[in-house]
Image 1 (cartoon, protein in one colour):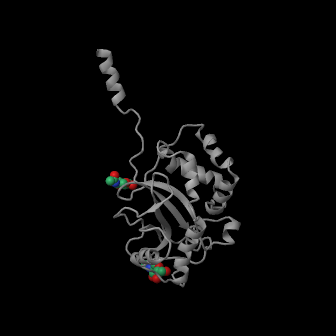
Image 2 (cartoon, helix red, strand yellow):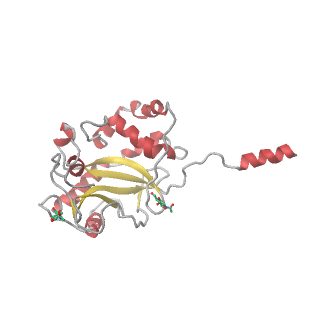
Image 3 (cartoon, protein in one colour):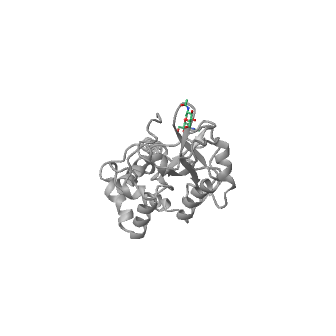
Length: 246
Ligand SMILES: *[C@@H]1O[C@H](CO)[C@@H](O)[C@H](O)[C@H]1NC(C)=O
Ligand SMILES: *[C@@H]1O[C@H](CO)[C@@H](O)[C@H](O)[C@H]1NC(C)=O
């Protein structure tokens, strides 16, 4: 009897803490000129810099905060690599839409692995690594990235000198564009004490299958953008954004 009680106690006590308390998976895309204005980027990236590429998929909580994972145990990497090693199509697409931009930094594979370790590993109870990497190539990823870019290009919001926009302006442009997921977040990095550069757009994926975009939760976090004076740079000249502080 006593043994049974102990057994029941052990079984009913959750010893393994899972990271199921995330609410959505952010699909984070980055504006290449902002990144490459501060970091020396690979030559092939610089041939076509005016675009968005994937930064990573990050689990987020109910108030829009990003969750970071504890490092996975040694030996996990080889297993994870099989996901793209087993699919040439997947691997090709990952290279295409999720490149490592920096010339002296990671290879593409190291970049994907880093993102998975920092943001994918702790969702593994609900989300196998294969799903994480497959979701990087969401349906029509090419159209999604092009649409976001074209939203800003056709509105002449990219470049033109020091023209800056307030956050609401960018959000409304994204909202009014056809075929874009609802209610994204934007993030920025500082230029100087009064202006910032657009850095990323975060769309939100339904966490169960990572196939459907949902509105991002209401969030007070400004992600470095403040309320205004956001510049979307048109040139990715290394060093040109470096005086930029931050
Ligand atoms: C969400 O995560 C952020 C940190 O990224 C934290 O500050 C915030 O309190 C979290 N919100 C909830 C409801 O847990
Ligand atoms: C910050 O940058 C903007 C845009 O280039 C410029 O107009 C403004 O004068 C700068 N502000 C300061 C305090 O340097």
